[in-house]
Amino acid sequence: MHTEQTVIPGNWTSRFLNGAPESQEQLEAGVQLALQKLSDHFTSVDQPYSGATVSQLREQIRAESSFPVHGRSLEEAMKLIEPLLQHAVAVHHPKCAAHLHCPPLIPAIAAELLVGATNQSMDSWDQSPAATLLEQELVQWLCALFAYDCSVADGVFTSGGTQSNLMGLLYARDAFTARHWNWNVHQQGLHPDSHQLRILCSHTAHFTVRQSASLLGLGEAAVIPIQTDHTYRMCMNDLDLKLEEMARSGAIPFAIVATAGTTDFGAIDPIEEIARRTQNRGIWLHVDAAYGGALMLSEKHRHRLQGVEAADSITVDFHKLFYQPISCGAFLMKDRQHFRLNQIHADYLNPVEDEWSGIPNLVNKSLQTTRRFDALKLYLSLQVTGTSGMAEMIEHTMDMAGVAAREVEADPVFEWLHTPALNALTFRYRCQGNARLAREVSVSNELENAVNHQIPERLIHQGVAVIAQTKVGQKACLKLTLLNPLLTRQDVLELLDAIKSAGWNLEQQLERDIDSIHKREWINHS
Ligand SMILES: *Cc1c(COP(=O)(O)O)cnc(C)c1O
Image 1 (cartoon, rainbow, N blue to C red):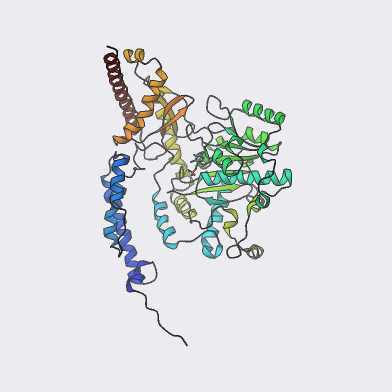
Image 2 (image 1 turned 180 degrees about the vertical axis):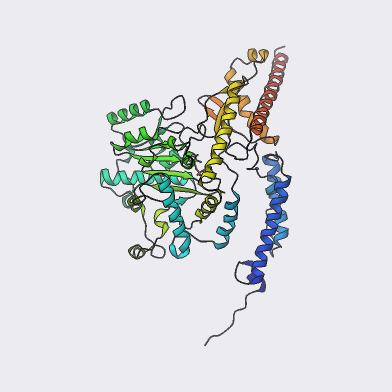
């Protein structure tokens, strides 16, 4: 018999977490190093961004991106990543207020270590036995939170809103095609009449609706934008108009996406009224609550998603208003039967026999195969904050957005556009009527657009603030997403002041530029 002993190199044991003391010492040392780096960084960081430009950063990052043939200590390797920390955006900083990009809760950061160290994979039960069951418990809790009937509803954790929206429209398409044309897209590909299919959503809905339409083979042109009212919510008159037009033209509306929290305005579409229109027409209602879904935790604000339980499917993100590290989201479906529409059985992973014997393989419900145990982060976070503790943080950020909106409204330097429905505030810097400038630049909208467009860029390169820009109609606008629970009224005022002075400086700079253009023209003419 062959009894040759295999000897593995001594240091391999300490490279992986296992029962050996030296392995655990390594982990502890590694985590200590990481913690030290984090505390050095967070102690010293006093602005939302270093201000480095793309080219400056590229040089630095490139310099450290080759690998040694024979490894180095973790301590040495950690030194290499210092520029990564130094030039990270500081998501906890009150002046980091651009996107739906949250500071993560500490219990969730601790959970990330557990998730990584145990490395469960959520695709099959034999790769994540307990984790599979915990995820299902959380999904059931979420279904209840959104007032679904838990005996028929189900869902799955996703990488975020992009994936969840794609899933909603995928099941919408496949359910419609099965019912209407007795056609299995999954087996047969798109039905020949699929070019008639239409998705309706407000024109401020997330771009991933169009992206999904394209990925699903329907084309972006299948997405029909609906007008919004003065509060940037989907306008029911226009929705009715578009539905009538479609009925006349033979186009088939198979899905409506209602947004609960648009990215620019936080607007929440009137879900109940939309549901009334989908139900009697056999149209799938998908609610994109990536942003606003967290309001379901708040006694005070829950009613604004009234009717959400009528949705056939729901997107909710946890790496936004649930303060989870990226990535963490979920897709929920009112009727779990629909998950069958897109199920593939792999002999090695989720054989049908498993289903007969009641073994849950979550790959049956997911577009991903190997998948992280992100549910643990949400679980530990909610255990620590409590549901109303989470709600209070969200409510505070909404109050801060209210403060910002009132300041903007009261200050003639700003053009006020809306009362924030969540904690995103879109507005515009108004050029200061510098009379000469206004005369010279006859197209004042263009001037204001140029100034507004450059404000975020200037602020980030000064390391003063990270804010976003967006467009409303033809107007370049500024956007603050005030989702940081650590934000104070004082921070809000400072942020607005920073925007004002950047705007003023840009205006003056523009005036000098115009002067020099005129000088050049004068020289050319004479
Ligand atoms: C963030 C967001 C998305 C996209 O979600 P990701 O998690 O970034 O993939 C979709 N819809 C809305 C309304 C969002 O706010």
